[in-house]
Image (cartoon, rainbow, N blue to C red):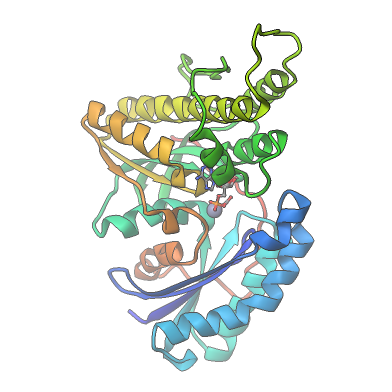
Length: 342
Ligand code: KG4
Ligand code: ZN
């Protein structure tokens, strides 16, 4: 198998990685744009696309240098072409196509969501399929029956906000800034998770779907708080920490309950988790406890492989083995709907 250069520009991380068979990661470089978007309180698509344009080639050079390789040593280009912000994706897809053309090497199109699950396979360094796959990112909250690295059947997903989106919106409501997930987690460390009663949608429902928008609204009402006078209101900072902890616990409770339901429903004893929210310590320990109770193996990557990166596109090695090439007409596809289980 050749050395594969992978490119990721789906949102606000500009990333490149080099890997080869097994898969073996030779380098993995990520440039975050957090500082560019922070003052806007969220990712601004135009700003993200422009920054990718400026940063991508230096990041590719750095990935090659760290792998101790030159461009001529690359025998295949992989790129995340879906889902994501269209302008951002286009930068990566265009660069990948040009590289494949000038190097005269095959191009492989990789689905960013499949890659998030593959990050767990990478970290495990052994086969993890078939498994239940939970992707919890800024744009997606999905449960899959992953039959193999590339064959995912949809078990359920969010009907409104994604888990990461809910973290980001609640961070904004609480004045915690951007990026929201890590900020809420830090704030929650000083709060009581049972201080504020918040809803857990579909917790006792048969469906493996999620809904987080009601939870976000409940945080908003709890924050306004006037309808619930307290004899001795805690100081605002404690209230904020309590809200962060209670919100985080509500999200975690639902993600864990639905993952456990999915394990039981499919009869599988392996759970792979990926996406930025999988970096959350409270979620990680709750999933570990649940997996222990269920007698299931938990595959969850280290934090650096949970958030967006290009190494997770090493799922491309599976496509290489199956001769699944993309043509140079490859397009950026912003939205992606997984297919339901048959
Ligand atoms: O997978 P990812 O890096 O990008 C997407 O594909 O969307 O996920 C980003 C999301 C953001 O919503 C961010 O707030 C959330 O992951 N996130 C976290 C944590 N770290 C990142 N959410 C909760 N706790 C964290 N520690
Ligand atoms: Zn992602």
